[in-house]
Image (cartoon, rainbow, N blue to C red; front, top):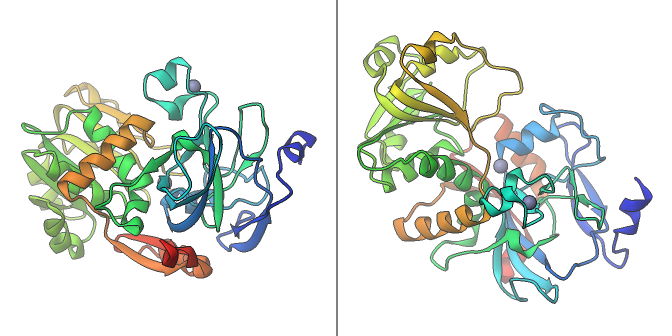
Length: 362
Ligand SMILES: [Zn+2]
Ligand SMILES: [Zn+2]
């Protein structure tokens, strides 16, 4: 570690978490957090969801862990136990922290509401702070975390703390692009992949009153649950008849998952003329398709990553009002490795949320 990093440590306390050094196996790991800054809050963690990004990161699918052991987890909910003099929250407040914990707050990107594109953005884990105070970020598979209070969000009272956790990443990631591309009345929206992200994508599209909400999955076993989530149609992407019938029928498609050796042209063929295919899934490898899949029908392919502060706040208000809630399975934080294994085997329906002993004190 650099001397700069050491200087930023508050050696009076240690936070304890579960960290990876590049394998899916997590070991207990303690670290000294940064000293609490004027805008910071310290959160005693009650819940943390397990996101697909956690798995990509700890298995080094997205690159080597260059900053040392990584405590994953960016769907964090807990109580504020310490607040800096200028923090937005006070001790005792219930807050949630998503995939980023800092940004400069006054550049053109921050002012446009895209804090995740700020050059001084710090992601919640496996990242370094760029605010001049040094230090590394560690995530929510832990007992505590210290973050810039601007990236800690009040949880509406009618959303349970455990259900709020997955909204902070999976919820924001799916809500933001649907809103940006005007999902709503008059639009037919498809959601590829009925998993942690997709099961929320279907609920958002439904709550936004889209004309059609099409669940697209490789497995017929998801058909019934997709209907419960609000899908009006189901397409089995492995069934050629289904794919033929659904060709060019959706104005917006939110792609939350993909198969091994995915034929991307096939998925894009479902987009209606002048429609948009939005990638929120992040394959480890490059993707390819023929240019004519786009040129012949003015189809756009775009991408989206998490959401800025105002969009997260808007999402919580919308979820609160419309009753959008993740379907979760709780597991104890002490069994974080069991949670990761369950996630990697691909069977959670639909989000695993790790629970700490602090949950009993909420
Ligand atoms: Zn995530
Ligand atoms: Zn900025």
